[in-house]
Every structure is written in C-alpha cells, then in structure tokens.
Image 1 (cartoon, rainbow, N blue to C red):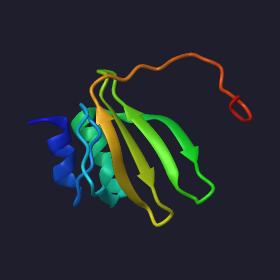
Image 2: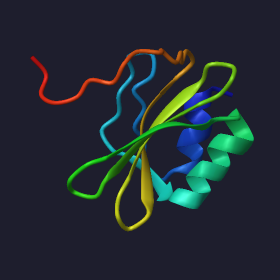
Image 3: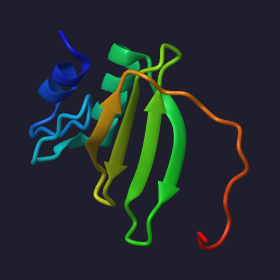
Image 4: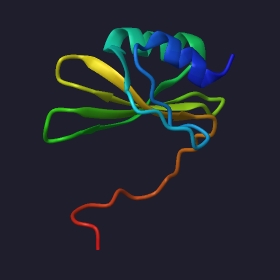
Length: 101
C-alpha cells in the first residue's frame, strides 16, 4: 500500500503533491488524529513550524527513513495534508531575516 493511499484513507478529502500528482480537495482531520497516524504508521516527527498572520500553522514532519509530510492546521484544530514524499533532508543553513532581495 502506498504512503499517499494510507494517508488518504485517514482523511476525508484528497490532496497529495507527491511524485507530481495533485488533487483538488484537501485531506483534513482533527490534529490529534493526524499526528497519531504520522507517528504510528510512518515514524514521522515534527521538524519545522511556521505561523501565518491568519493563525494558520504550517508544519513539516519527517522520519529517519526520509518520508515527509507538510500539514496546515487551522485555528479550529483541523489539520490538512498539503504534500508528502519519500525523500527529506535537513540542511544546516542560516535563516534568512527580513525581505528577500
């Protein structure tokens, strides 16, 4: 069973930007359910987090094996799968501050 298929069965909709495949409707579920699925089925842990002015949280999860998932969580606690894939690598680069040039 593919990773995208397993995640899609957890969520009610379907969106996966994996291997160039995109779908129109987001896959969303309560945050606790999504985190449990990522940890139990894929061994993924949070690697980064960002907060948008609207209160939406963007997070990247990844496993030691390289699989990764990007989630967006709304203020109501609903998390939606944005993208996932098989190859994740952390880089050690300084953070950019201010406006891009």
